Structures are given as structure tokens and as C-alpha cells.
Length: 293
Image (cartoon, rainbow, N blue to C red; front, side, top):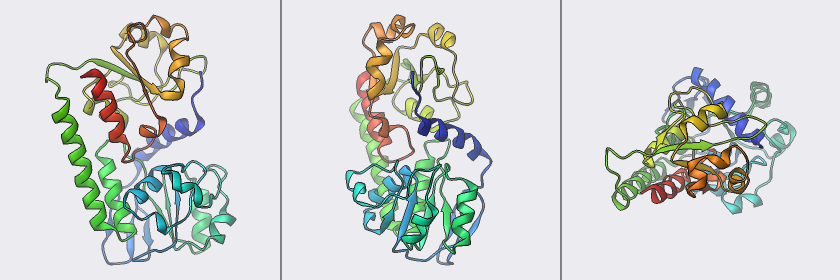
């Protein structure tokens, strides 16, 4: 079955991201040390921003700063009003010329943009800051604060972090889970003839499954590949999968023999809720928790 090239790229870049710097900026100095340890001179209050990451785009809108965006990628499709912002192409086929034509005073990149493209933009005198997706779910808070600092929305970023904390607290209060109850769960990123892929223990998705009250059967795996034999032998209580692929998964052998499929315990989740480290992750945590509660 299909595994989107976008998700594969995210997976690979997350693994590469493990060698990056610790990120964080120097408030008020005009300099910012990004997640790759690069020191970038940035404007104190940028007014023309190009986002090269769907997660960053979502965070910017969550900080009520969508009006600062003058460019985004084809993959930046949330919230819906982002469609009104010009696209500079994909991520692997980014149009440097289009980015330059938008006259940005800041470009914020994710982990998928190539070093070649970053250097090309820098040669044009455009500051590029890399805010990558982190391996742990706590990294979402770090990225929100980093973006808030970069775009002059520190107060909004702190408010969003408090709001996210409150969301998690409300989920725990509304659907409390006993400490000794941890049903097994598996996130099917890819399946079928192209291979089986899931989120291992060194991923923010593993943390999400745990926060939702489950026990990730792939928690002891580093990386994203998972054998179908192991999946069948583990026979998890629940399967989480992108909504658009759930029906096909449930009709494909050998997955039809999994108890989660037979007992209608496959949880379809809109892809945008889990495929990037962004505020919508809490929607996925809540949806999963409600089912397994």
C-alpha cells in the first residue's frame, strides 16, 4: 500500500535531525542560533515571512500572525486560508526565484529543505532560520516558542503553550486512564507491498500515542520500518491510521486477521493531525483517547 513521499521525507529528516544543535535564540540581539547551530542575523520584527514547513505555517497561524506570511509551500495546506498565500513550489522542487521575488525579510525552514537551497537563499541576502521537527512531543512547545521569538510574538507563543497544556489536562480529566491500563497500539504510516512503516520509540508520535493512553508496540524500534510478521505476532489492541487509508487497510490481507480489524478497533485520524509536529496534534491525542477510554 502507499506511503506518501512527504511522510517518508519527514521520517528521514527526523532521523538526520538528531545531529542538530539545541536551537534557541538570543532575544533582542538580532542574532538567532537555529536548530542546526547556525547563527543567523534576523530582523527584530519581520513583516514578510516565507514558511517552508507545513508545521511552521500552522504554528504561525496559531499565533494569529498569518498576515505576516507572503509565501508557503504546496504542502502548507492548513488552515484553509493559507490557500490565499502564494506557493513557492514543493520542498524538493522549491523555486528559489519565486521566494526571492516575494522579497521576504525572513524565511523559516523545516528539516526537509536541502542545504543547497538554504545556501542559495542566503547568497541572495535572505536570512533563513531552520526550526526542525523534534523527536519528542515536548519539542512542539520548543518550536512554538522559537517561532514566537522569531516573529515577535513571544507573548502569543506563551499563551499558546498554556492553552496546549490546558488541552492535555482536560483530556486527562475527561477521559481518565488507570495507570495499570495501557492497551497496545500501532500507528500504520505505510503498509502493503511497499513495506510497513510506523513510528518508533524515538519519535514524537510515540509520545502522542502514550499521551493518548496507549502502549506503542513499536516503542523499542528506532526508525520507521516495521516487519509485517512482527505486527501480526504483536496483534495490537488498536490500530491508528490516516483516515483516507483506513478502509483499504481493513480490506487488505494479512491485516484483515488482526484483532483490531476484526473487532472494529481501527482509529482513522485526519493526516494533518499527526503527520507534523503542530498544535493539531492535540486533536489526534483526544480522538484516540476517546476511543480507547
